[in-house]
Image (cartoon, rainbow, N blue to C red):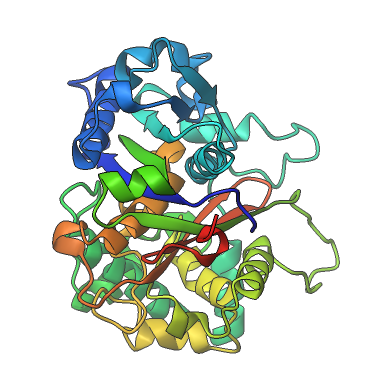
Length: 398
C-alpha cells in the first residue's frame, strides 16, 4: 500500500470492560479512554487535529451519538468524522485515522470506538437488519453453529470439541493476565470435559462458554505523522499496511461448494504485497477478532493459510499461548471483551501495545517486531492490519 507518509500509533487508552458500567454515562466512559490515550502519548486535547468516532448506534438507539459524546471526546470545535461498518467498526476507525494522517490532511488524529451495550440490545438490533422474508430461516442474530458442525464433520467430534475447548481455556488464561478484560473466569484445562457438557447450549454445538458476551467499554488511539511520532513517542507502533475485504453472505442449496473466504483473500493479498512468505515465522503475534472459540479455531487456518489440520495442531500443541511460538490474543481476545464498536479497534490497540512494550502483565516474552490484527463483521467483512516496530520502508525517504 503506497502512502504519502508513514503513520505511527503513539497512544492507547482503554476502559475496564464489563457487562455493566452503571456508574458512568456514555460520554464519561469514553472520556476515561480518551484521557488514558492522551496521558500515554503525553498530549492534551489541544494537540489533536481531528477525532474519528465509531460505534453501532443501532444497538443503543442513539442517533448521531458523536454529537452528545463531544463531552467525552473533546471534539468541540474540531473536525470530526463518524464511522460505522458493523462489527468491523473499530478496525475501520483505525484505517480512517491512518488515511487522514497519511494523506497529510492532519498530523495527529484521535480515534474512539465504544459500546455501552447494557443500554441496548445487540441480537435484537442485528436480527432486525435481516430481510423478514428471505432471512427468516437463516438469521439468528450474532449466533451460528455452522462452523462447529463443519469442524466436527472434518476432524471428528471428539478432536474438534477438545480443540475448541482448549482454545477457549487458553483465551481465558490470557484474559486472566489482562486486568481490563470482561470475562476472567479462571478456567483450567482439567475443566474441559465438564464445560463441554454443562455449559448451556446456544445453537448446535455452540455453547455459552464458547461464545463472546456483550460488554460496555471504550478504546481510544492516537495516530501521528512520522515526524510527530518520532518526537512524541520513544517506540511508536507503525502502520505498515491494511486491507479491507467484504461481500454479501451467500447460501448454496447444494452445499459443499468451495469458496474463498474474505479472511483468506485478505491474508493472501496482505502477505503478497508485503513479501511475507511464512506468516508463522515472520509475524510475531496475532490479535484476532474471534467471536467464539469455534471461529477462532477455524480462522487460524484461513488467516495463516494453513493446510489440513495444522491449525488444530497449533492449539493442541499450545503454539498459540502467550509463551508459545505464535501467540494469539495475549489480551484474551473478543471472547473475553466485546464492546462491539470498539472490539476490532482493541485488536489493533493490543497489537500496538505489544510492539510498544506497554502491554503490562500480558506482554509476550519475545521481541515483537511485526504484529497482525483483524476485524470481522456482517456481510463477511474482514479488515486485516499489519503493524511494525521499524519505520515502514515505503515512505522512509519522503
